[in-house]
Length: 418
Image (cartoon, rainbow, N blue to C red; front, side):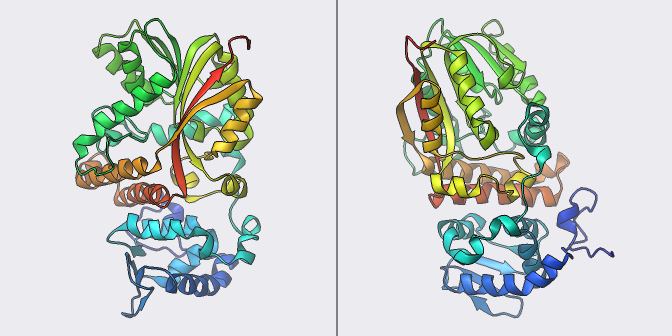
């Protein structure tokens, strides 16, 4: 079959599904239907969709410039939201304020597709590949595909703490990137407080990041054992720990959380649970309980989604799975509470702060855009930069619309519970 390619600036060897125009029967036959559904949906929305002939759809609002409708519709027909993201990566559509546009879509996600077609989503849309299930054999590769991209890349949009999770601001009226680092420290300190971390605490951290939480725990006098599956993160985190003079207080190991042994007074895990996968949630909570000493506490930070939405989408394969986080699944607060209870853990404290994540992502995206030229010099091409901007804006929209939330949980193991 002769392949048809889209943007000649997209490298076919690196981005095959972005460079290639879908040519399967599903794409060809479905494109007119996708076009009809899309146009019908946006006519009802507070957006402004600009078409190549100069006409406009929508009730007015954040702008979407649709440069190549036929290719856009073919991608939507072929892959749903995966096609939406790939079409953006290919430059077939654009938006002056991408996050604002995506927020409108995210806030009306249940209205965009007619209910009868939503029921067929499992038959129509791609399913998660078995190679991305978070088994012990697969998880290292899944994590590496994201976190081992380049420490230098992440440094181009994260603050000095190198914290890659939601910050906790004093106020949502955030204008300066400089507000990010103290807000990240506030988030970390609250989690350490939830886990009762202090002098002499034996702390297990599941998911090291670049070491900021381990450092702040060590400054409290804790003995920290931190595990990660990212070799890049481990290397930089160890350098930061040594430079701060805490090499005797912090040990970082390249290890799957399922292989951790021993007993700990406290456990902290920040936005790592999203990489566990639905089928492995029972095992994750069993290990939390097994590793926690009686009377101990856990500080858990998790991105969450509504329970019914989680059940409906838990096996879905999305653009985020394909390009950003292979094998991931966002849990609901109900699932966390249920699995905690089944494993002898009680939820004693819970705080939701999703709008803080929207602000965190805004600051990251603005910083990434400011440093786009430097990101290019690091070897990341325009398609990657469009992908990363879409990822940050897409994620921000989820929190801004309330489709996603982020929560901190305090879990406690009873003193007599061995």
